[in-house]
Length: 238
Image (cartoon, rainbow, N blue to C red):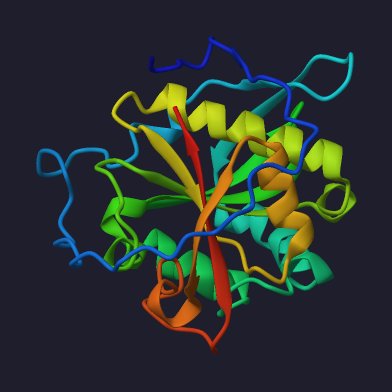
């Protein structure tokens, strides 16, 4: 179901359990061709600017999350502050948001940087991307239209497990209901970032494997790789 600007989807409440944490090493499939799946000039992420809001299930108060594409001129000061804080410690380089946004916005539309607005107030930074067209697909068996999320929550929310999980759950549901062809939402946080991994588990994601960072970084970073580290590949299915 494609959600217009006047529609709202209520996400289920995140699970209180930590979620399945068993990891399974998967064989590396051949890298897929890095060509868009769809007609030439088509929208690779189904019109992110037109996505409607999703309800956030965090306590008795009804709240709403919207993912709005980044506006570099007005959003850069806030993003610079967030990327300079401890919550961004485990993000892949480059951490400079101006350089990062330039790389994303100069692409073919397979990646869209967004500001997450909770009741209209900035709550986090999202990078939505076509995982099946990313370097991740060379090491992990992505399905057509698999959609990835990289998330940097606002400092006030980053280390609060309940609100963080509620936002991730709402964002995952928003992707699935705004992209009818997408069957799974993926995330790939650094395994050392236990708070983020746990928040994803509570939001309905499960860890399916771990990979070395060199094999999967580069999307949203101008094709660069980062020093050796491990990432957890997390999946949330429709």
